[in-house]
Length: 136
Image (cartoon, rainbow, N blue to C red; front, side):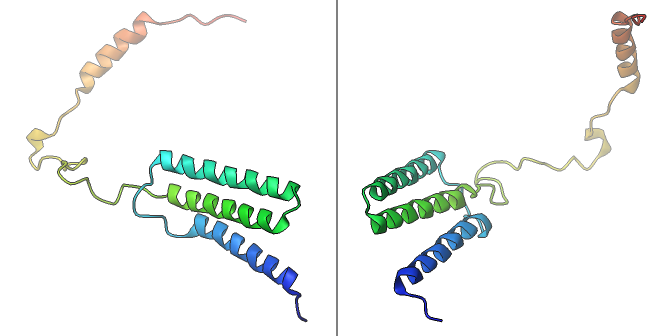
């Protein structure tokens, strides 16, 4: 079975667009975050491409409409993939102290909690705010 060329390019384009969408969702995210302002510009550009594709479709320029809308879809997929990046990178930024430091090795450096004082203060607190149940 031979597919006419007028349908073949549509099938190839559909496969390419679906592949771009799946790649944006499942491909390994970029190593660093992309600035949010640039992502917003990309999304606005993709929306503008969709608008141009709509105008081309309304003026009966089908091939131009398909190409411009496909470009908009690709830009959206790229923006989704770039938005998945993060700067966490596994280590602290250069020059900064590590966030989770290990506790000191000797027990004298570990803070203790005074449970007796806590219970006294909690008892005083609940004594001030005791409520009588409302009868039904």
